[in-house]
Amino acid sequence: MVNLHPVLDLLIANGLVLDGSGNDGFRATVGVEDNSIRLFRGDASALEAKRLIGATDRVVCPGFIDMHAHSGLVMLAEPEHEPKVRQGVTTEVIGVDGNSYAPFRSTQDLDAFIRLNSGLDGDPALDLSWSSVERYLLAFDRKAAVNVAYVIGNSPLRINAVGWDAQAAGAHQVEDMKAMLREGMEEGAFGISTGLDYPPGSYASTDELVELSKQAARLGGIYHTHVRYQLGDRFLDPFREAIEIGRRSGVAVHVTHFYQRVPVAGAAERMLRLLEDAREEGVDVTFDSYPYTLSSTGLLIVLPGWVQEGGPKRLLDALGEPDVRERLHHEVSPRGAVMAGDVAHKLPESGEPCLRRPQRRRGCGDAGQDRGRRDL
Image (cartoon, rainbow, N blue to C red; front, side):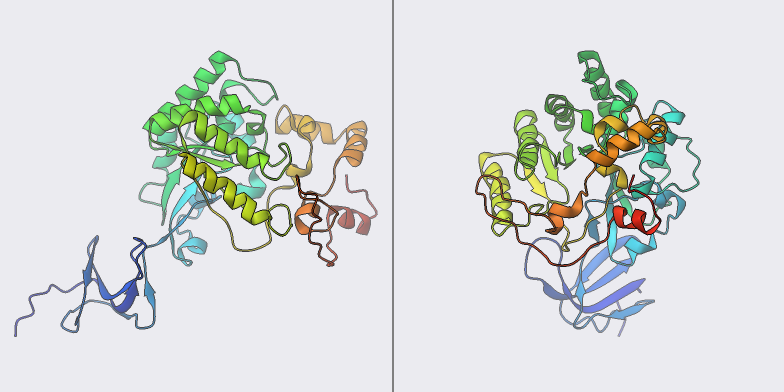
């Protein structure tokens, strides 16, 4: 008998296929031919392929989308991107937390911003020959092992239009940022991101972010936000600001690393209810969350805004001044203590005490004491 089926490049046989549509899955064989994927239900024993993978008792699904990735530089240096590929990630959202690397009008500013965020995004040896979003994205094209969805951080927009200082953006500066955002989205960006704990993007007011988000919304983009965690009650108010930005601008809001920051029974339900109520109101708001209790960021996050104002060089100069270090010694406190349950804290509006954990944790102060030094 003549086999009417072509010889496929790859056959993944008899797996439970979850296609991303939300259904319960179905048994099928998946074939790959050139750049096309084909599904075969029923008996697929007559099919031939150059490579066969048996998937009985296995799930076959599309690649995962990582909605929060700090790979915008490292992937250019290591395009195989094996740490993510080996976990099944095939698309990453990069440029998150307001920390993206295009557009930049000044190579000096780009270099300084890379150094500032190297704890999160790395500082690989790269040819920083791009200035626009278009040229930056071309560096990934047909090189990176995964797809990228790029969002433009509000920090580079502010650095280009306002500078590194903690000052309000004037009307002309806002228009300048909107123009850069519009051009960047026309060149391939999916929207705007913020990291409202990280200067200089954290210096943006709610009104400023609403105006930028209106521009993103007009082009079908999203507002991807690390919220302003120090705002108001430091519990629900940070998320209320994000929802307000979506409500006033019409942009689709994505709250990234949405987690229970206040360790109190019932807090998670109240957080979820806040977003669900906003969705019922008509605000397009979604979130991603990681399924573990740890988190990570750079040590700069524990430093107050006044010492970071002016950019990385001014920060390093200030840290070398004895009077600045003395002031910081009295002002800086461990960021993770409340989230870890190591200090007393009460749930806003209810006064309920936090859950507490008895474990002993070591911080920068402990490391300083080990070396006979103060923490700052």
